[in-house]
Image (cartoon, rainbow, N blue to C red; front, side):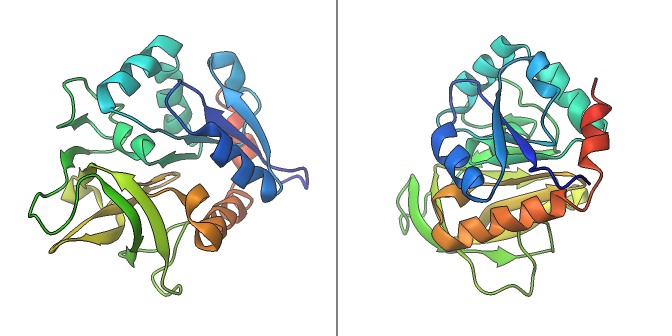
Length: 222
């Protein structure tokens, strides 16, 4: 790959904390562009789908942009995509939070966090990750990672999909914290708000992008 800085596209559909994600990436030497339409997909080497808010309004906003079929094409042709927080949930087929279908890029559903009275909902604050498999953000043998969560729902991946990359404790249960398949991954937590630990994860992801033919993958989208 060229020594030019990676270009990361932030999908802007009106429900993502783009500012903090942008700043975190820029500190790591990336060039960051907003993606609001198909035309904006010509430049990025990889995409990030952030998200803050509720499932159904997010899907309505995404549909309004007209980006959904182009995101499907991006992924089907090997384009790297990282979901963050609500962005993780939107990758799945459906959510108990709403009635609309999700993007369906990953098999499974999203369910409300278990209400056992031992944890507050929404879950807000720091929690440790329990790696399940190696992925571009975190390895099973990496030092303990504490990251920042704000959520009331969590993904329940289809167990046959081999998607689960990390969990986090919630009361007496463990909930999905990170998923990964091929070049598509997502984290329920906010790496951009997780101090040095989150910055290290993003740095690892960017390094991984540099080892794959991202330029070729992006060019094939068009």
